[in-house]
Amino acid sequence: MNPNIPRRGFLKSTAVAGAGTAIARYGRLASVLGAGVAPQIATAAATKPAVLGGTPAHQGGFPAWPVYDEREESALREVLRSGNWFRGSGQKVAQFEEAYAKLIGAKHCIATANGTSALHASLSGLEVGPGDEVVIAPYTFIATLNVVLLNYALPIFADTDPESFEVDGRKIGAAITERTAAIIPVHLGGNPADLDTILEVAGRRKIPVIEDACQAWMAEWRGRKVGSLGKTGCFSFQASKNLNAGEGGAVLTNDDELAEKIYAFHNNNRARRVTGYNFSYRGTRGANLRLTEWQGAMLLAQLTRLEPQSRTREQNAQYLTAQLRQIPGILPAKMYPGCTRNAYHLYMFRFKAAEFGGGMSRANFLKALSAEGVPCSPGYTPLNKEAFVKAAVASKAYQRIYPAKLLADWEARNRCPANDKLCDEAVWFTQPMLLGTRKDMDDIVTAVRKISAHASQLTSA
Ligand SMILES: *Cc1c(COP(=O)(O)O)cnc(C)c1O
Image (tube, rainbow, N blue to C red):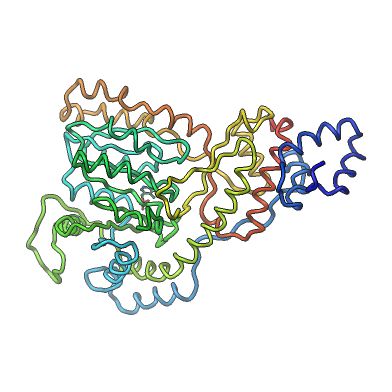
């Protein structure tokens, strides 16, 4: 008998269900609960799932996001009263750039209006444009792709390593051609992509790497912060992100010349360290992608919370992984050996229906988990198969720029079967949930164990 199931709970279920059924049910419970399960989790997991009318495993929600107090209020009041509301007049954006470059360990930081514009400015700074190919990860937020299409470059998707949810570094070499002008790996969910493999293949072929670190503030690869290892690293400070100013972004680079080009691009071709009305231009193309002083002040305030919040997320995520990996069919995202810190923008795992058992689908699992008071999401759909991407590549502009044969072969080059499968199996929790208590994490584990124990009853829930 499993010593972790209290005898009283066992007797109670025996009395209700009759010995035969109870023993059959207990056999199932014992196998899914396994050894080493905390007694309170084992007891709660034996109760009826919420989707069948039981009490939800978790009550009261998870921590609210955004997090702010007097620090943010006084920062915004200071900007208001100064009358310096844009970076040309105030110092908040410049102060943030200096602090963030130092924190991430890069020589230069150029703050931008958002993460999309950070990626856009990187591609422009590197002069990636029509006729070029850019190798990107297919398991990502749409912005990674959009900036490639904005520059009329041809996106080439390298398949995902489903174990890590990150682009498979070993697949990048085969995606490279003489047209490849940049590689954009994404540290999706805050989990660093395999930078050893990616930087090695890129270095060998002399192709710049733009790290999409828009979900990976404070994540580390071999002790160095991600976003400082590629030619550029791009960050987002959008409202859902771990560092939040409503909207905002940054490009980091160690390359002096590139930093000047990116600065000028984001400031309508006007060079750095020029104040007032300066109409001497540099660069080729430009736009206004500047961050405001409001956002600079917000980011300086929010930055004081980043390390303690990152630590809480990391501790909770590590605890969740230790617990959830014991449940058959639940596979938390793997980290590569070079990962020394995960930023956990998302908590990601795969739901393997066959191993979870009971004939339960992911859709039913998500529904049952939500009913337990645990918000969850199926995550991204395959970007490379989106109709709009095919339409963009088939558009008049692309037909003018690229040889017909190249476009005709594009779809076949962009099959990502591992990514397709991952999109059918993924489950996400969002980062504010990881700011919760140990009890919140135990409730998540209880909820999953409860569903696991009753999987065969939940196939049509
Ligand atoms: C959020 C995000 C972006 C874009 O950032 P915005 O600030 O929303 O423009 C780009 N890539 C990834 C992976 C992201 O998560």
